[in-house]
Length: 88
Ligand code: HEM
Image 1: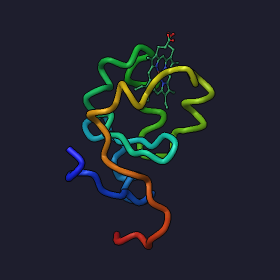
Image 2 (image 1 turned 45 degrees about the vertical axis):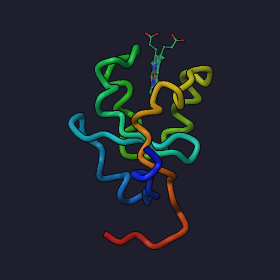
Image 3 (image 1 turned 180 degrees about the vertical axis):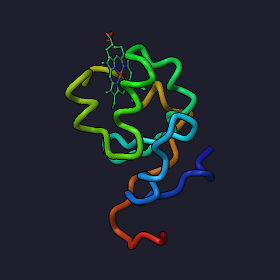
């Protein structure tokens, strides 16, 4: 499992902002939420508000009690990385 983890830059994250390819970051972890969208209790449109970005503030405004890291364990892409230049 760990072998596929890799750092994601903010600009790479920002490319994944459609319903067919949606990533978001919460507290420094990037998740591929594409397959979770249909299961989000608040609906896919609400969840898409955080797509392609650091959605920590948005998430905490709505439901800080939700255990996203456990729900999205299989969707973890890797750490959000600000400490190197974007390649794209
Ligand atoms: C519920 C929005 C991210 C899991 C909700 C609800 C809203 C919402 C409005 C309330 C639905 C209702 O009661 O009718 C958002 C927004 C997100 C976001 C704007 C953008 C960051 C996430 C993530 C997860 C998640 C990343 C976890 C993988 C849940 C769960 C509930 C819920 C479990 C039900 C919570 C409860 O009833 O206590 N969401 N959500 N959401 N969301 Fe999200």
